Length: 314
Image (tube, rainbow, N blue to C red; front, top):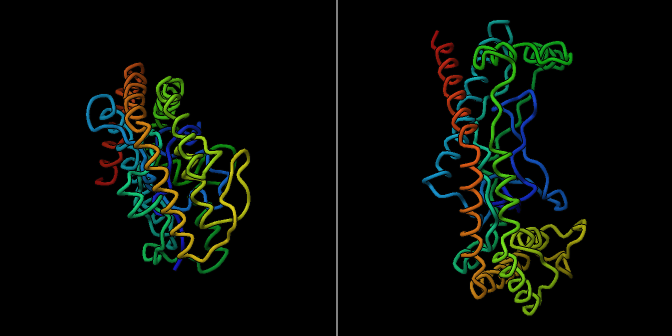
């Protein structure tokens, strides 16, 4: 049994998709806002209370751009494996399902129902979804695989990965995703919303009266709650629960109690409605401003997917 956050995976200010310059649409990675938490990134998926884009309008277009990315990455990997087998490489790590890297979002406080049921989502899991790590039969076999996959290790990507990417994209680099830029633009606009700022101040005052001073926003509250279970290290510029470590059951109850206080303050101040209204507008405006980039990216990735699928069938 292990204790880990079940829903930890924010896409908030400072935690947006980043794309490596040479990787185009199929190698984004997450950057930063949770570096001050001991178990940052321990699990994937939307955090409890995360506001997600609606399923229509500009957000639907953005979601289409996000959804096609793992499909293309999967085709690239399949073609890379075909190339490896063609070169006589027999030891190849199992291919795992490609996942979307998520939509830009802001963090909500949990609802009262969520708080009672799961707190912030830090819960006991059996580890049934954890897979055994692949092990090569020898260091020589591992090196053979790495060299065939990536080339000789020069500045330019090579080997079967390069071959697969050229087949799919027509070049080593894929089309540049606009998701990061859109998310950052939306966050800037959202962060300047006066109503959200006012409601956040009321929310902070409410939590302080409930015995939880020094918190900034619902994202900060989520990070704070993690320390009931992982009471090590520190949060620069932020408070942590005092008195730990606690037994697992006690930590769980403290998390739920805090989540209920957070939920109550969000309800009484109207913070959620203000957040949702501001975020919907900010994200919609950001997508509209870059609609040509978004549609261009979708078209380019669709074409790449079709090329890759033809290669696999051939």
